[in-house]
Length: 349
Image: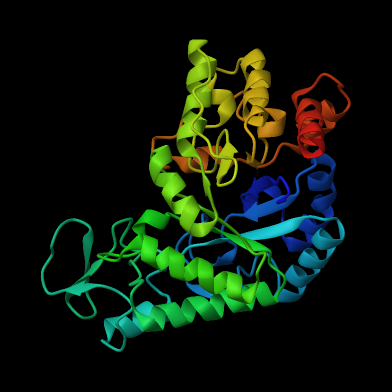
């Protein structure tokens, strides 16, 4: 029987100064009771959020070295904590070597047009063509059907699994490629990963209805249940019974993440609702994901609402409030200690 996972999502710059500091903070993750850590992208990237990757094989210099990362993996594993990396395969950074080659017509890894088809196509001054980049001009969309792209992906997966990574969170899976069948692609990807590491953990982001996210979960292994997250907030704010659309075998349930309004803001900073949110979250069977700081009520003193789709998401990536951790640790009735209690009970049942 598969174990229940409590995944702790960390936006690295807000949680630790660097990887060495993160190694020290593993004690906190262990104290909380999380079984796994999901780091939002830590790869080389020109942006703070890191979702436009310029080099899949390198960690951001300010975070540390591969030697530091290997030690992090080793210490985490000794504590029984898994490490999952955020793998972005829908697009790369403009300066990724594959895109720079593609500008020169040396590969089929991206999509080009002589004319602008719609506003998702951006103009390239170097070759005077238009490239498909639905998210932003600095995020050209990868061609998931390209053999060269798939070879690169295999190499990247082997590299990080070889460094002891336990699995991947897969970004925006419905948008893998222009004109590509995403189910075929992710079926290929899942089979490939599990041939390399049979017990590798894969969880998909498909921000859509339950039926859509569950479809990807059945192909990939797991998926975040965005609709259930919405029903939890609806129940809390409207004092109605919880609508349950959840399959414990495939779904990962959560209250908020790096693209969403903090749960404290979503319930109007009502402490009773926050405690009840924890109850509802852990009433659902299967895996659970927590966003760093929710266990101490991060967002309590701020009006930080994020527009759907993550616009304004910088508002919910504030530094971890370690002073509040110390304060709540000493209070047996605190939200922090309630999370610890619920996590312990959940893992025991």
